[in-house]
Each structure stands twice: as structure tokens, then as C-alpha cells.
Length: 200
View 1 (cartoon, rainbow, N blue to C red):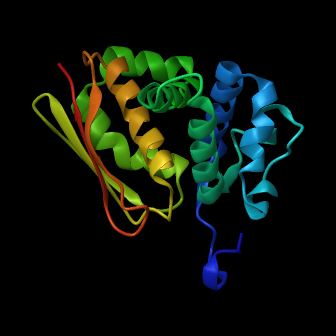
View 2: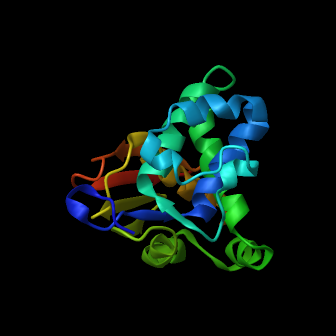
């Protein structure tokens, strides 16, 4: 699909990681609050959704612009702040994305077989499953993990935080105690985004 500045390819994210944000918001704040989020979207990205459909018509198998994902993340955070704290919202969104995208077999494999090191090694593969731009590298150092993304299309800091927080949920599933984002630097797609995760 074209439409990026200069007629280039529009960067996409898989619906499997976009739809859960909408589902979480509808559950946490009510379906009636969704129109306020939609009203904040630009006309261009609004064309990608179906306003009256469940979860705005976003399909898990579909591909949607990183711009839509970013604007949804921004709007959901802004409108959910009346119900929850900032850190709670971002962490909940990341956890909901992981819980919705993992099948029963994959979750069991994570819980029984995976380690932080194997998750770090597999991160480039999982990134490519859900984003069509950018690459990710991750490395475990003791009870911390450093991850960096390069070449990711322009994106909002909120969307970057949500994507990063999904790794917190993965670390929980592989048995890390009290994992959290310790450091997060977002370039917005203009350079490298980096995160440091720590656990007890």
C-alpha cells in the first residue's frame, strides 16, 4: 500500500497487536468511550477502521499503518487516564497484547521451556511477525535485558512504550520476578529506540 510521504510504502503493524489495545480500552473504560478515541484520529487513519464494528473492525490477521497504531495508543492513554494511572495503562496494554496473541501452546512453551536468553535471541523473529519495518536486537546481562530497535517507521512514544511493555509480560511468563522497564529511550523512528528491563 502506498500513501507515505513521497509515495513510499506505508509501514504496517499486525492487527494482532493493534486490536488488543482497543479491546482493553473498551473493557476498562466502556464501549461508549471509544468514539472519543476515534474522534482524535486523523482522517487518513480513520479510513482503516470501521467505527461501528466491534474493536473498530480491526482484524487480528490484518495489517494496519504504524500511524494508526500510534494514534490509537496515544488516544487510549489520554482517555483512560481518568480511570487508571499512566504506568498501569501502558503495562496493561502490553500484557493484554501478549495474552491475546499467544495461543495456548505458545504460552505453555514460554512458561515451561523459555528463558530470558531464549526470548532475547528470538526477539528479531517475533518483531518481524508483527512489524514490517525495523529490526530488534536484545541481550540478557544477569537480571537485566537490553533491547534496541533500529529502522522502525515513525511512531509515537506511547506506542513505543506499549510495544516495550509487552516484553515485560513475556518476562513474567518465563518466570522473571517483578520485571519492569528500567530505562526507555524513544527516537520516534528517527534513530534507535532502546530499553533496559530489570527483574528481581
